[in-house]
Amino acid sequence: MTSGSIRTNRAGPHGDRIRPGHRRTTGIRRAVAASSALVLALAAGLAQAAPKPWQLNMERGVTTWSGEPYFLNNVALGVCVVIGLLVFGAMFIAMFRFRKSRGAVAEKWAHNTTVEIIWTAIPVVILVVLAWMSTGGLVSFANTTGSQMTVKVTGYQWKWRYDYVDYQGKAVSKVGYMSKLDALSDKTRQLDSGMDPYAVKTGDENTYLLDVDKPLVLPIHTKIRFVITSDDVIHSWWVPAFGWKMDAIPGLVNTAWTNINEAGTYRGQCAELCGQDHGFMPIVVKAVSQEDFAKWLAAQEQASAAPAAADGPATAQVAPPAPGGKG
Ligand SMILES: [Cu+2]
Image 1: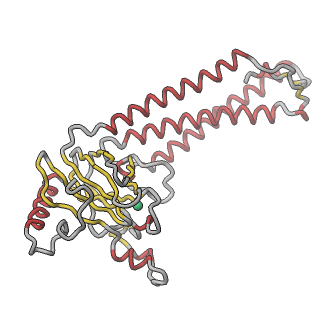
Image 2 (image 1 turned 90 degrees about the vertical axis):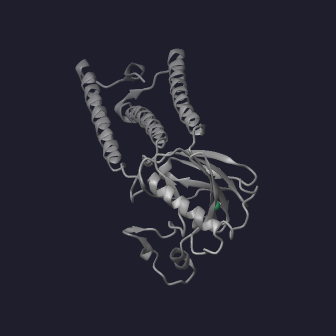
Image 3 (image 1 turned 90 degrees about the horizontal axis):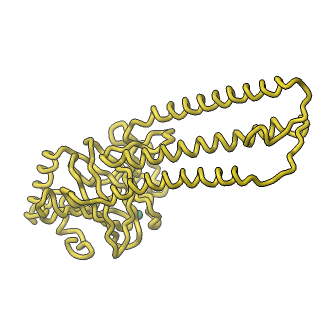
């Protein structure tokens, strides 16, 4: 909108009409500076890998790919903020500066072809650029080639099953287990348990409904392919630090991949409403060094090869057969 399109009947010398305009631009500049300071202040608190109280933006994540959705989200948010400032700014300026009580008289004309072409073309360009950028992100996410490891994830009402299919080009023999809500959270959540949810902790961290009995153990600096399916209803496997979620659908195998940069414990949840205990089937990924992972995997294979050793976490022979055999 240009000020020429709206006439004011205000009395006063010509200079009077320029000064408020000048004040307006400094006001807008100040508003832009204030909002960018706010965005920077918010961004400063976002470097952590796990969600924190009062975290407002999504997290940067800990994988080679997770920066992609984070970046795209920030770009889209930036575009929204700029458009919002322009549109609401113009609207409020029009409402207050050119109001009837100040003697503003509306123009009689409507439609302006040039302006209409401009305000159609600019959003089209913005949308094409955003679509082009996010298509790049989706293509790189779909590319599971060159994976060094495969893990099959199966959703159940209401727990997860992890089967290790292959690692570094070698098939993994019978390593798979159920991963379900930890016993303390499970006891605490029962009606009238009288137990304090805030007392469920792992170290300093409150992990009520966020911990499992057996986490998914993964190596860092390894391209890991996930094949994700479900045994009963649709679930969704979601670890925010990885930057994606993937539906687990009965009769269908979805793929996804990750390559974790840092060792650590990453928590997630089922992200598809899947029944009464949907909120009670958390995900825990324990990312360890490649050496530690090789040792852990060898121990699991050994434990599953010796049926007498019932103390190991490998429960491949006890667990129900996964749909479609070894997958
Ligand atoms: Cu679920």
